[in-house]
Length: 122
Image (cartoon, rainbow, N blue to C red; front, side):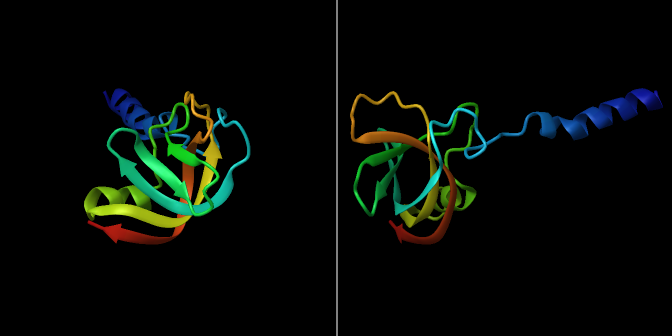
């Protein structure tokens, strides 16, 4: 009985390690190098999270990397969900991921980290 209980406890403790989300930057599905960019993240009801660069080369559409459930860094996600924030400006490290968009000016990225944040409230 004790051996069975110990085995189950060890299995439960190790379970999160096997199911860990690899996130963005260490994902094998990336299409290129990650890079830092400044801009504003907003949530569009039709598209989801989008990123508008301060230097508008193209619009970035934010999605989780393949096999990940993480869309935004925790600090940005928390602000958008719980503090009635409509946009978060800052410096973001983004990584290119495969895109299904037919529009040349739209790129899909996952966001690895966010810093130097300022927010706009509703």
